[in-house]
Length: 464
Ligand code: ARG
Image (cartoon, rainbow, N blue to C red):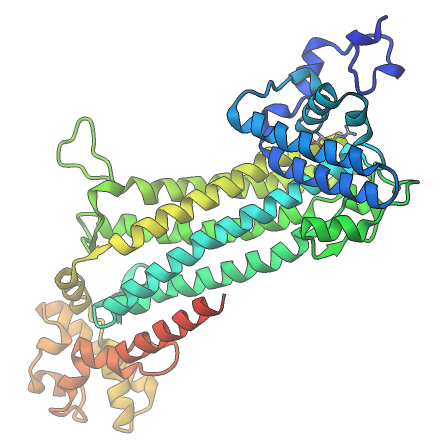
């Protein structure tokens, strides 16, 4: 059997070519070619290091580095021919290098394996992805602060159990999302530290006999640390799982946010308007304006949770060290990163364009006895125990339900039927402004606190 028919990278040991279907089944090039830039960066750093280690001459290094630059240009120009028979991005690029440089190209793979190469590539790629995601996250958070500041005095109903609970300011509500996203930011920044450790030099699994200088490649590639064990370096994908976990939490937040936007744009709520450019119509119902962007973000959240579950399951049964199973890490990871990045981008574009319908929000807050707790607190200040006040106000609410009156709409005489402690000053407490202004502490809904929180938020963003 001529060796041309077997894979050129390992043909020596084989006596028949790989089955055509198996070649396709085992290939990853269709999806891992998107790692090409990071693969080239890793290879260039490796070649530079090999020269310092005395393995490659300076001329060989220069030829390899320049050859890889040209291959990158070919890929970006769309003239590079990706070959499935060459299995993956790594062997496609190496084969092309050898085609261009001859024997020098064959020297690049000295002292490394695709096992440490791919682990390095994914980490470099994910590091860049996290940075791009953080940019969108920042943009979204800045937009939330802006809107919260404008809406610091806007009153809406706050909900528990989706039932009207107490009045809140719209600015305060928006800042709840800001807080969640701040934790997502922290998680991604923290995850990045563990992504940014270098497996290169682990070689296939046991390290290499060449006098490699890992601190050189570490510095060239901007890694923060060198992986301390070669078996671990080529095999674990916990960094990808950790990213998907952080991405899942961020998507869960965006999905809840989406759910509120969908509710708020409905004819039943009408709290906000979304500009037409974030919505679509219906092909049959002329009146429809659907909040597609939040709906899709809510829907896409499932993909990211799926990636997390998929990767955890991928890893749980693998013995050390590298197994081909690991090739399955890429598609879910890529998809999770793309989905999070796009969803954040959509939200960052959309949030500043939210148009609150302040009168409708205010009217909704007025209904539903949202100041009942304020009345109870008022009676506590008059000296009654809270449980008794709760009971008294319960009776007043029942009366309001029967007569169709809100607490603020009852006369003083009517209110005094429930407690003679109630006096004229109660009406200040029963107003929506009185209610929100009274919650004037760090983390409370008072407009002054919203403004203070916006200021703290801006300081936080400025420090990043
Ligand atoms: N395409 C492979 C992957 O994504 C690269 C590593 C292959 N290593 C091997 N020993 N077959 O994991």
